[in-house]
Length: 153
Image (cartoon, rainbow, N blue to C red; front, side, top):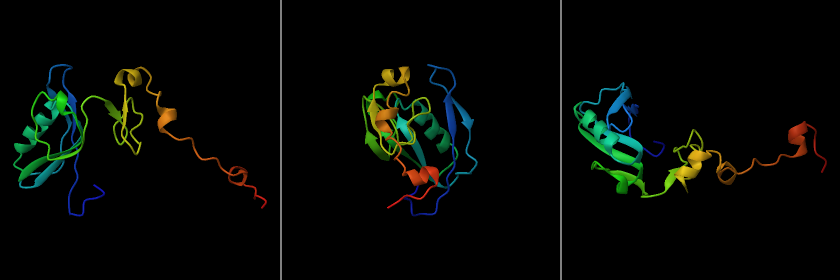
C-alpha cells in the first residue's frame, strides 16, 4: 500500500474455516465498501490450497466489480487443490514453512522485516525457538541514557 501512487480505498474481509477439514468457509467480517463497478485487488498473505481464495474471488465477483485480481505475498502452488489465478506474486515457495513480514506462528515473528524459512513442527512445538536468532538484542545504552547523568569526555 505504501508504494501505490493512485487514489484507492482499502477495506478488509475476515474469513475462517467453518468446520475443520470440511473446506467450507465462514465470513467473519464483510466489506464495508460497495465494490460494484470498481477494480478490486484482493491481497492475500499465503495462497496454499486455494480453497479460501476461490471462495472469496467467487463471492466478490457476484458483487459486480469491474475486475477482481489477486495479489499474494507467498504462493505455495505445489499445495494447490483448486486453481486460482494470481496476478501479482511476491515469492513462490513450495515446501518450507515461512514466517515474518506479516506471517506469524502463535502471534510471533509477524513484525520481522524479512521472511524466514523454518520447520513447522519445530516452531509449533516451541514458538519461541527462533526469537534469539531472528531478533537482534537491543542496543546497549550509554550510562548517561540509563541514569540520566552526563557522561565525561
